[in-house]
Image 1 (cartoon, rainbow, N blue to C red):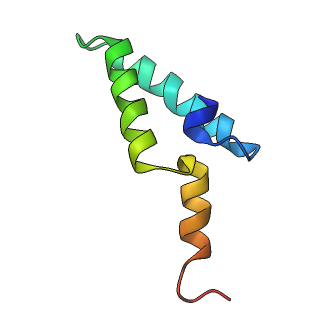
Image 2 (cartoon, rainbow, N blue to C red; image 1 turned 180 degrees about the horizontal axis):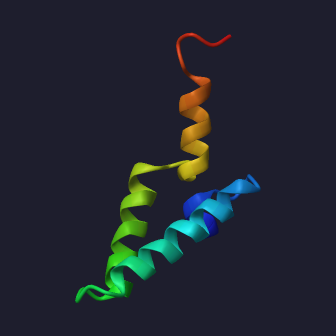
Length: 68
């Protein structure tokens, strides 16, 4: 959960935990295995978000053309 949200921030683990728990609760009612879906989403997030979710958001907000 911490790796998904972000290690270097205080809000990263909170976001990661809420995403994982929400995903597990949502997939619990479907017929798809929850552990496989969680693993696939972790792999996709690691490949897409190299700096974790919060790190990517910070980087994109700081690189906005109108800032600074």
